[in-house]
Amino acid sequence: MNRPERPELMIAERPPRRRRLWLWMAIVVVLTIVLFGAILGFPIAAFMAKPFPAPPPASVATAMARFEEWQPQTQVVGSFRPVRGADLSVEVSGIVDQVSFDSGGDVEAGAQILKLRDGDDVAKLHTLEAARDLAQSNFDRDQAQLQRMLISRAQFDVTAATLKSSQAQVAEQQAIVAKKTVRAPFAGHLGIRAVNAGQYIAPGTVVVTLQALDPIFLDFSLPQQQLSQIKIGQNVNVKVDAYPKQAFTGKITTIDPKVDPATRNVAVRATLPNPDRRLLPGMFANAEIATASMQRYITLPQAAITFNPYGNMVYLVQEATDDKGNKTLKAQQTVVTTGSTRGDQIAVLSGLKEGDVVVTAGQLKLQNNAAVVVNNAVTPSNEPNPQPHEQ
Image 1: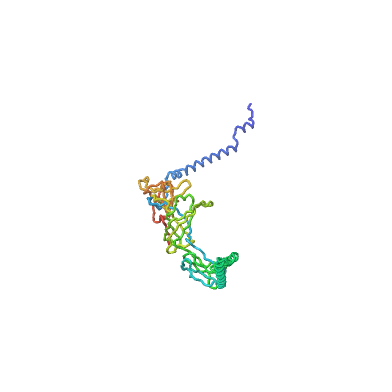
Image 2: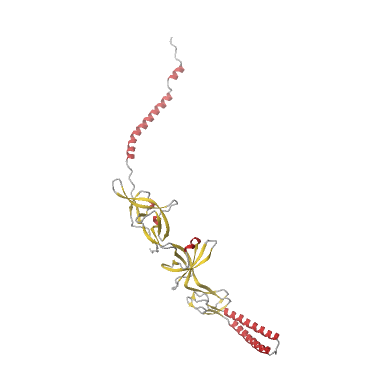
C-alpha cells in the first residue's frame, strides 16, 4: 500500500522560484558583459597598440657658451657731497642794505656777500674808539709820571684798567659791526639768492648756498665683509642717472676707522674731479669698485639660468638621431655652478665648457630630452654694460 508523500519533503526537493529567478538574471548579465567586451575590446586593443604621435618640437633661442674677460667688481650706491659747502646766513637781525653777488656766480674767499644797515653800530663804534684813544693818552701820560714818581701806583693801575676796558668795548662793537656783513668763508659757486635789498631778516636766515664743486666727494657704505677688498687709492667708476651715457672716475680717499654697530657697515669716501661741475651735491650715484685682478669665465645671459633651491640648471641643445635615422635636436638638462653677475651676464664656474649651445629663451616649455628647434630671431640681452634705449 503506497503511502502519500509528505508536503514538507516535496517543498524541500524543489528549488524555490525566487532563487531560480536570480540565477537567470545573473546568467543574462554575464552574457551581456561578455558580448559588449567582445564588441568593444578589439577597437580598444587596436587603439592601444598604435604608438602615440610625438609632440612637435619646441621653439627656443640659444647662445654659445664662451670665455670672456671678467673684472670682479663690487657695486655700491652713494651720494655726492661737496668738499666744502655751506648755507650762508646772518647772525644778527637787520635790514638788508647791499646784496653783493649774483645768483649762480663764483666768489673768492673773503668776498662780501651781503651787508645789513649798520649806521647806528658804526657811530657807536666811533664813540668807543674816541674813548679808547683818550684812555690811551691818559695811560701814556700816567706811565711817564709814574717813572718820575709823580703819581702813585694805585692811580696808574686805575688808568691802565680804564684803557683795557675801552679797548674791550671797541673790540666788542667791532664784532657787532662785522656781523652786519656776510662774507664768503671759502671760494666756491653760489646758488640762488634768497633775499633782496630792503628786506628785514632775522638771525639764521639763509642768504644763499655756497658750494665748492671741484673736486667733489662720493660717500657710500660697504658691508664689513668687503672691507678687505678695498684700499686707499683704489679706482671707483661712477654713473649717475642725469648722464646715463657718461662715466666718471675717482679714487677712494678715506675709509672710516670704525664700523657702524647698528648696520655693520663701514663708511667710505671717494674723491672725483669735477671741472665741468656736472656732479652736484646730493646727487644719487651708482659706483663700481674693481676688487680683484682680471679673470676668465664662461658667460651666459642671465635668462639662460633656471634658478632652483636644489641647484641652478641650464638646457643644452645636442644633436640626436631618431628611429628613422634622421638628425634631431634634443634639450638636455644639466646643473651648473654660477658666480657673480654684471649687466645682463652671469659667470658660470662649472658645469659647462666652451662651445656648448645653451637655451636662453623658451625653457618653461621644456623637459629633459625634449625635441627643440632653434629660432634666434629674438634673443635676450647679453650686454656686460647695458644702456637704456629710447623706443
